[in-house]
Length: 344
Ligand SMILES: [Zn+2]
Image 1 (tube, rainbow, N blue to C red):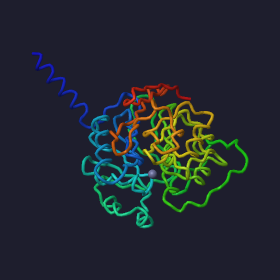
Image 2: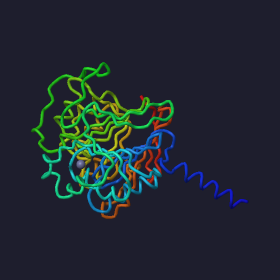
Image 3: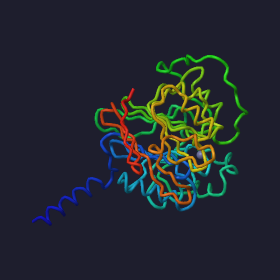
Image 4: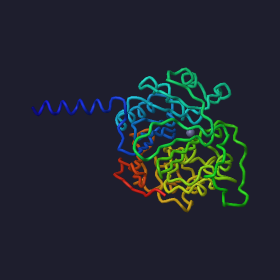
C-alpha cells in the first residue's frame, strides 16, 4: 500500500513537470558559472526557461548550463535563448547545448555575415545548429513569455546594434548634467549587445550583455531609457572598457551581480563605479577576483567561487522573486548566504 502511494506520487510529480520547469512560484534567476563568460537563466512563474547567453565553446559550459536547466530548473527545453552578441564567451556554448536539450526560439541580431571574422571558428556551428525558430530582435520587441498568476512578466529589448527603444511617457529626462568623457568608438560587437529589461510586477532586472562605455551613456542620457531597476548584471563582466558610472547612477540598482572570472572582469574602475553608486546595497560575484588588485572584491560570503578557474567547482548564484514581486532573495548556496531585499 505504501509502495503504491510512493509510486503514485512520483508519477504525479513527473507528469506535472513533463513540459515545464520547476519554479519556486515567482521568477527565478540563476547566474551559471561559465568562468568569465555569460549564462543567465530565468525560470518564469509559468515554468518557461529564458536563457541569456551560453558561455564558451567546449564541453564545460554547455554541461554546466545543461545541469542548471535540468537539475535546478527541472526544465525539458530552452523556451527562449537570447544571444546578446557574437563573442565566443556569449554564443560559444549554444551549438553543444542544442544537442543536449531542445532550443525552441533563438533571438539575436542575426547579422551574421558582418561579424563572421570577429566571432571566430565556432560561429559556423552556431549558425547551423538546430533550433525551432530564429528571430531578429529589435529595440521595443518583447519576448512572448507565458503569464501565470496576477504578477505580470515582461522581457523587453531596450537596445540592439546601438539602436534604442523610442522614449515613452514612462522615460524621464536624466537629471545628471555635465560633460562625461567619451571613449574611443568601440567597433567590436560588444557595442552592439542586446540590452534587456526584465520586469516582474514591481521587480526590475537589467541585463546589458557586454555593452561598452559610449553606448551605456546613450542608453540613459539625455533620456533614461532604462528607468530605475532593482538588480543589474554588471555590463561586460565588469571590464573597465564598460561600466560607465553614469549608467549605474541613473538606473540606481540596489543589487548588482558580476558574472566575472577568476582573472577576468571585476576590474578596478568598473568595481569602483558600481561600489560608489549611492543606491547599491549589495554586490555579488560569480568569482573571486584573484588578480593582485584583490581589494576589488565583494565580501567572500557574496562570492560563489573562491578558487581559481582550474580548480573551480562551478557554483551558481540564485535570485528568487516572490510571487507578489514585493521582495527577492539572493542565495549563494556554496557560501550558505541568503539575503532578502524589498523591491522599490
Ligand atoms: Zn563577454
